[in-house]
Image (cartoon, rainbow, N blue to C red):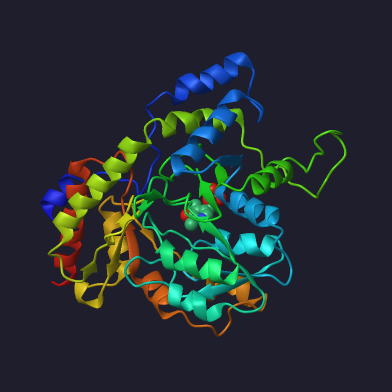
Amino acid sequence: MSQAARSAQRRIAVCEPYLGGREAEYVLDCLKTNWISSAGTYLTEFERAFARYCGSAEGIGTTSGTTALHLALAARGLGPGDEIIMPAFTIAATVFAALYVGATPVLVDVEPDTWTLRVDQVAARIGPRTRAVMPVHMYGHPCDMDPLTELARRHGLWLVEDAAEVHGAEYKGRKCGGLGDAACFSFYANKIISTGEGGMVVTNDQALAERCRSLKNLGFNRERRFLHDAVGFNYRMTNLQAAIGLAQLERIDEYVERRRAHARRYNELLRDIAGVTLPVERPWARNVYWMYGILVDESFGCTRDELRAALAERGVETRTFFVPMHEQPVFHGMGLFAGESYPTASDIGRRGLYLPSSTGLTDDEIAYVVDALRDVQATARG
Ligand SMILES: *Cc1c(COP(=O)(O)O)cnc(C)c1O
């Protein structure tokens, strides 16, 4: 490590929440008025406002992104014998949601640059049992939705977006979350906007929205309260969480602009570093860079994991990309995905790293991260 880097040492988190708007005011209002459970006006207001932001009619708040995914699939009535096509490169929650309802997850590989599912492979995997397709917009970049929508329509498949990483991202000028038959968001602490923990299903399908509302609330019958229409869940978001979410939503445009500015700065500073592949933004996409991901090639001078360790020594926190779903022993043990091959998912899973990506990152911090990266490369190359 150079003297300059050592003396400038600090700690830069990979992704932190960005508060500082009216969160405290709204939460305090909940406390003062006693509305701390899932009843309350912040919840209905947040659901309405976030759905509208996505260009959708209905929003159903949940306890997490994972429960939003489960709720959507359950409300659609998917179950044993049904196949759901999804990318091999995603977080395990996507596969788990299918398994929670007893459906069968079917994987496809991803594009080498956007890291989102390959539509040609979706077409190849549609069979008599296929009921749904679950595209995952990855690290802030949308999937190529037009050909996917066309394919889904042609085969009568339900299209549900895993939009947990793309609040505010756009496909051909339309917001992610308003592109499929339904979409699921997460508001975990590191997402673009947060409620601490939380999630939401958004949809234009009124009947689906009604089933989601019933199922997330123990399936209570509307007329006769302790009579139940279904084996429901308790996936209710609280008014307190929604109060934070509403304050976050008021500033989402600024958050997205900041993240895009950070990405432009990283792109500029990293452009000429050998052995590093930068994230892309297709002409039809507005990437919100939930995470600024890079791929580390052999020519960099050391491996991805060595780079990660050396950056950590310099106070720069990073995360490796997801381990693809077909490489997870837990699924092999269930007889899923064993022996299947998704070369791009495996390759980016091995070489991908995301750099500090918080909304509140400063230009100075970005410069420090890039200097640290250059320093690691210089050291590795001797
Ligand atoms: C974060 C995330 C989830 C899960 O959200 P939680 O709120 O953590 O349950 C699901 N899918 C994707 C793609 C995610 O990034």
